[in-house]
Image: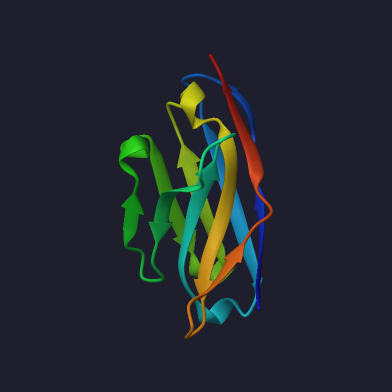
Amino acid sequence: QVQLVESGGGLVQAGGSLRLSCTASGNTFSINDMGWYRQAPGKQRELVASISRGGSTKHAEFVEGRFTISRDNAKSNVSLQMNSLKPEDTAVYYCNADWGLRRNNAWGQGTQVTVSS
């Protein structure tokens, strides 16, 4: 099993920055990809960014150039640096890990990000 705990959400004005962090515990050696998803009220959960164990990254078009995902395998940690935040970035952000040979999914509890205009 893999457990994920997020931190770093909060309230920020438009144009500001926040950094989200997620630390994994349990069978961390079996983690493959890690990523960040978000879900705004009334909307489906969507992928924000992902990173492989080797460090290859993917960012959604709507955050390209503003958000950066990074990972520290030694610390079992994945971070999301969010700059130039917009009100439409307001959502609950979830950390995700894909682990094991069967590509099981683990989710964090979510952290609220609110961007005021």
